[in-house]
Length: 117
Image 1: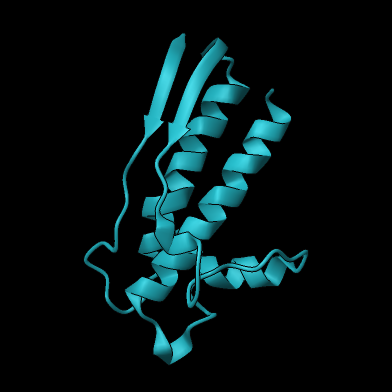
Image 2: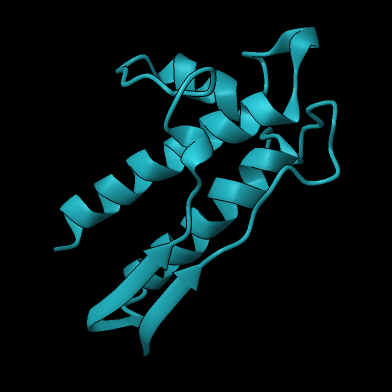
């Protein structure tokens, strides 16, 4: 049983072109969001987090403001296309992808908190 968890990894990675992993997500999405979410969701589902345990997910101010601000939307394709890099096409930059993914981290953390408190 785990009493506390610090999720703190990320960055732009070495990828400068929006390479896609086996999952279909960009390396930046895998590194900054998906890996953390898979770990935390797995721990929650398997009851490996102690009752009242603390989870800290380190984020970034990159997800807070323009030009990287992510919009609140119920359009699933909007988020999927950020994760798989299609939003950017040939104009992919690590900074854009990083900012958008960090915004999604904030949404994910809010959702986890709502469902587990």
